[in-house]
Image 1 (cartoon, rainbow, N blue to C red):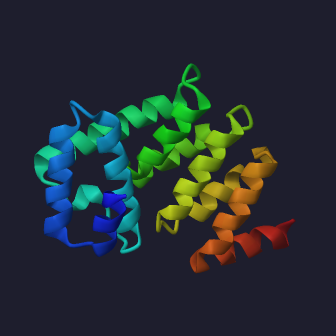
Image 2: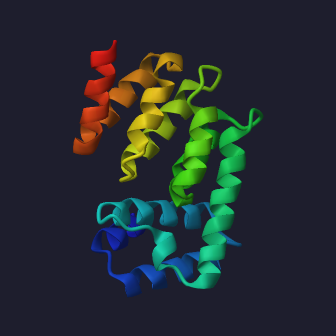
Image 3: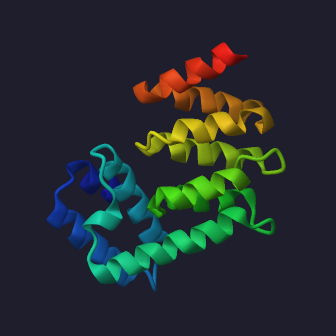
Amino acid sequence: DAGGIIGAGAKPTECRAFLDALEKEASVHAMVAEAGVLGLARGLARHGQSPTALASPATQQWLKAIADQSQVTALSATATAEQRTQAVSLLTLADFSTLRMLSEKLLQPNQPELVSVAFIQLLRERREPSGAPLLLKSWSGLRPAAREATVTALISRKEWLEPLLDAVEKQ
């Protein structure tokens, strides 16, 4: 996974060059470009960075288009669960306010459990303090695998432990 390796290094010039190359290839090899962006995003996340912050203006527009399309696919009742979970993964490119809005839809009992679990894992990968309240708010409507993913996510972040313990105390 070249994107993951480059992202783990977090060198801005290398990341920008990689993103520019992916954007140029996207019209021919969209899935490969998206996989590269996803790997890069995961590598950069370890350093608290995102591809969007390192991208050139033209590439930022391309990344926004991926995030926008991923939002549509993640919510689509006609897309397969596999398509929807892949789209959820690409939502790593979306801003947190978008994820907050999507949590109200993707963490509902009427959603495929795989999609909810993928969304919970996405929130876990983000370093947003506001992630814990989103997960706790949806708890009562989650099915078993999604609840397990939520607990795993909540205990994975030191700053998320206190909200979890507060919620347990209130029960």
